[in-house]
Image: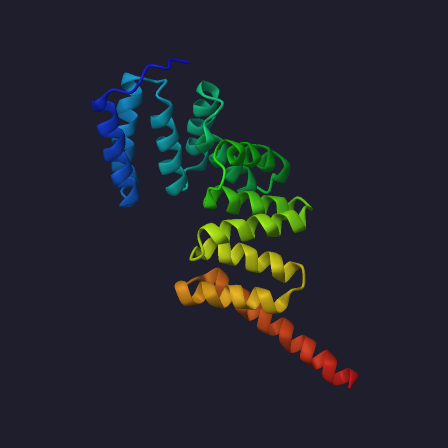
Length: 204
């Protein structure tokens, strides 16, 4: 791999693409990044950003191709490993997801989003306690993330900690009242609570 430092012009264009991405202008960001890759096909930073933008657009095969290329050029690309891990977890390929996410976490420790995906993957890989602990770590780093709150709530719900699950879903709705997943989960909790009360009443 070519380890030459990035020129100031390239850095400026990468930063411009980053600002567009943060503003949700993913297609505009990709125009800049793809031009950079025409000039330098081995620009790992540009490949990582392409993968991230394509992921936001839900162009999953394109995101996977760019992330794989980034890792081929630089095995220490934590963004590449994170994106491949995320895509594998979306496909419920838990063991393959775990391999990439553990590598991303090793390369970039204490990143809330990597920990969230790693925790969810661990939980679904029959490592439930480890998964919950990892999701809690992610939440400690980013306490107002609706995705983490919801993932952790579902994990607690599946391990029958209904009270904890409900409080996490309520926090999600406080932050994001339109969150459909949290609403459905609160309804599921309420149905579960209703069933528990009914069972208790029948036993009494």
